[in-house]
Image (cartoon, rainbow, N blue to C red):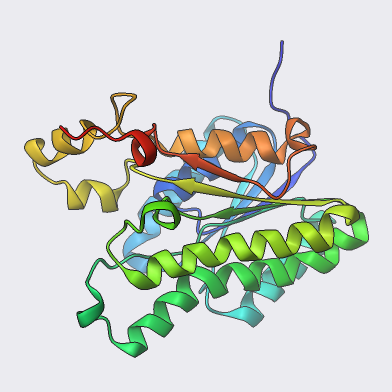
Length: 260
């Protein structure tokens, strides 16, 4: 039977406690990887984090969590070093920290522009910077950057969000050019119309939700696991020959959305 096997792998999911991130954490753990995910440490979300850990461990899989401010470069470095000290390596890095606040350019302050670029792009750089020396030393690594369909159609409602996610592409191309020959594959995954708290909040009525569904040619809104499955595939041996690529996970909406 063909399967995705990540046993003996160590994965770090930056921003892995809810939505797409939680889906990635679940799937990587279920595929056999010891998966550590980060969360903001907000006490209001402690129950959700604990429930995710309990769920995954209850299925017999290995998972751990760490509170981390994604903008804390030193904290990110210390966390990676801690994982390497305890587990001996980091095989897989998923950069999923981010936030989007829809608004037009006229109402986007310069300070907000800088803050959202930092949150959506610099956090990925901090993760990459922390793991690269270890991946180079072991001659192996898989880096998965979470972008957005906004890089194709300008969607998402904020100029800083679209710009930051486009920056992921440049980061991927640099890493692929420089580190693929050292055993490190980097790819970008662009989700769109995935059922998360944010999307549910923006399409909060049955009519709005049905209108969203009608835009997706496959006939449904995506699930976090739709993104997570691609992540697991690329992180496994099935992805050994795939690097420097972008994958749009959107049910066909971006290119073939219905006008109805």
